[in-house]
Image (cartoon, rainbow, N blue to C red; front, top):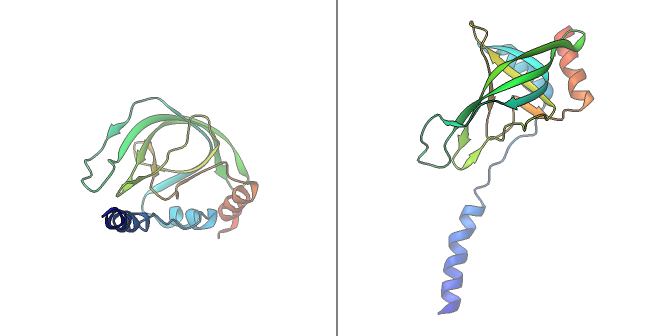
Length: 156
């Protein structure tokens, strides 16, 4: 009886362990190209976010965790053809999305982030954080920053 119960419990837990989220490795050039080819406008910057508001659930997700957003303040340097040298500061709406039970992990307060932020016609900025990191990477290495600068200077 105990052996049957153990086997049944093992069978129930194995399929859920096989359903892990698999993300492609982050790539600076791929993210730059996606931003350059998008209909939305993007600003690329290196700096830090500082949360200024509470989480606001954006929709109910029956399949898992609820996506949410919050306001933050960004301070850093905007990318240009000569590097990350233009100081910027502005409020940002951080939007965290989920896939089933996996949600994006927004950058912590004060962490160094390479961020690709959308900007609308009203100059309102937003950062999309998905279950797989794409539009923001914490603590980028110098090679990533150099690739972005090269892409801005001469294309990718």
